[in-house]
Length: 273
Image (cartoon, rainbow, N blue to C red; front, side):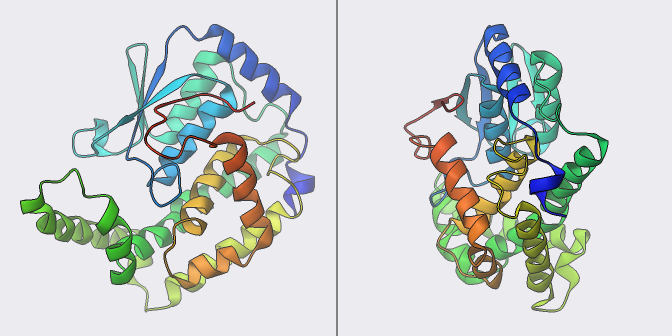
C-alpha cells in the first residue's frame, strides 16, 4: 500500500510542536558527527537522520566533529543537550519528543505508525548494511570514497594501517549481520528489492507523511541520499537513481533543509523555513 494513503495526514501538528519546541529551548544542542561527504550532509546516514530530526523539531544545534573511537558507546552520532548525553539516532528522537514535546507521529494511527517503524527498520537494519558493503568492501568505491576523503584526520604514517584495520572490522560486522556471507551479487539484489519497496511506498507523495514529513522521513532520507548522491559505482546506486520519485524526494529535502549546510563552514543549523 502506498504511503500516499497509509501515512498521509502529518502536518499541522508537527509545525505547531516545532514552534513550541523552539520556544522552550534554552541552550544550543551539540551534535557530534563525521563531516560532509561527497555532496551529502554527513558520511553517516544516522547523523543525517539526527540532523533532520532536529530540523523538523525546529531546534537550534551546532555541528561538532566527533571521533567514534572516543565517543560514548563508540559510535556517532550523539548529542549533548544541557549536560545530558544521548547516543543513537533513535534515542535522540525519543529525547526530542520527551524533552521538547515534539510528537513526530502524532497524526498517525497505530497501523500507520507500525508501517513507519517497519520502513525505518528496513532502512537501518538491512539496506544500511548494503550501503556499508559498497562503501567499505568494494575496492574501487573505498579508494574513491571513504579511503580518499574520511581519513585526513589520521596521521599519515599510520593511515594505511588504519584503513586496513577498519575495512577488516567492517567485513566482520557484515559477516555478523549475515549480508556479508552471501555470494557475490546477492546482497545487491536484496538491496534492490528494498529500494523497489521504498519507491512503491512513497509513490507520488512528497514525503512519507504526505505533503509534510514525518519522523520516518529522517531515516529514509538519510539512507537514500547516502546511496544516491556520492559519485560512486554500484548496481544498488544505479537502481536507486532509476527511481525518479526517490531522486526527487532526496532533492526536495536537500534543497529545503540543507541548503548552505553541506560544507564544513556552516557549523550551526536550525529548521528550514
